[in-house]
Length: 176
Image (tube, rainbow, N blue to C red; front, side, top):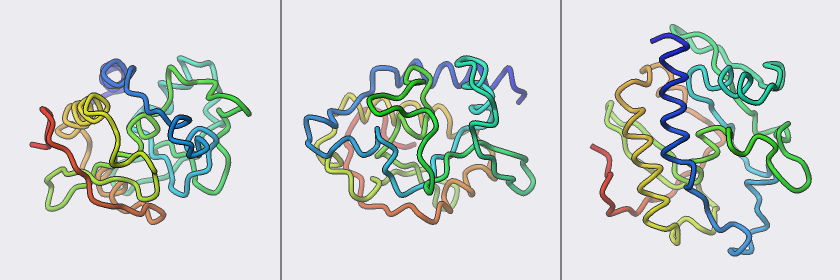
């Protein structure tokens, strides 16, 4: 798949997840995700870095990159630094925020090639997320699963700063 194909997929994923939002402030968690205070690396989809750069007119240098063996470079937002897209009050690229940000705290995992889900440990909303939010995120992951390269999935699974806890979901878009 080339850049144009991935741009179309990213647009579809963003469309699915556009209204998938969480009531962070109502949960009184301080909006830690929104202020960049998370302890894991945000891993971008293939060509998502280029997509955001083009749509938001931000330089590619705003992103860090990681070389994945037998695949190439992907964009990341490293956990040890503040997201360059956050101000004191908002995410300046919110309509084009990364899928890994959109889907948080739901984390895809692959065991023996089969996709499953977990929660990122520590989010106070994990067990109170709406079924609508879960449905949209799971639908997007189900769209991505068959087309994401194996090497990308392996890298995503190996995020060393990610702590997980059980995922509870009985919705229409359960992992296949």
